[in-house]
Image 1 (cartoon, rainbow, N blue to C red):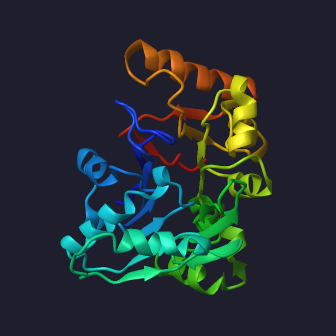
Image 2: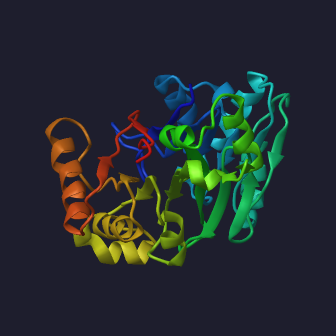
Length: 310
């Protein structure tokens, strides 16, 4: 059975805390695993979350600040130590190639796995598979940064009552799906559009066109909310979003499930009563901005399923 879920490995921003690891997010999408922004300590968080190196097929880095990339060295060496039987593709801003090279070859190890470097230079499609298209959009941060968007191709849902009405059954169901028409009956006559699911990953950025393009129509949006609204000027100065801004983005984009993460260490720890106070305020501000869908204030090791189709 296919699994589509987000495994949160870390939720801190620049500085890890006692309860928050540096960034790290694994998207399980059917038989593939896409690892986003592996910060320091990601390899250990994978162990705690029950994520194996064999689960990784793509690594997507938004930008080369340490909390989003220092874990690359350990993760790359681990996939080689475990001798993955499949290729792994790495996406990252081409402008940071020197940082990727340093992290990839930070220490001596034996390369046993085909690691394909596929750097990002501009907006557009990065990869197309039968299960999804992976896209990138430029964001607004002090260093070059890209967000990622995964879109499943639209399909068709067969409607049994219409199939019966037109006398189509057995092998003919597969035939009309393949050929699009059967005995004067079109596929549209016996089916309806099944919209593909959509996921986006938006990290360190100010509000910009790229944020809106990534979030549009997403079933699951993972987005930074480094600051609360009262620290709006800090967010602008350092290239980040507030909880209220993230909520407004999700509201305007028609997002179904919003995941807030990448929290500044200036706020209370997400543990015990402090977690309720801090997490509750992030949610309150996102709700006050008008977002009414599902909402998760992320904490380390939480799993968030992609919403079921409508």
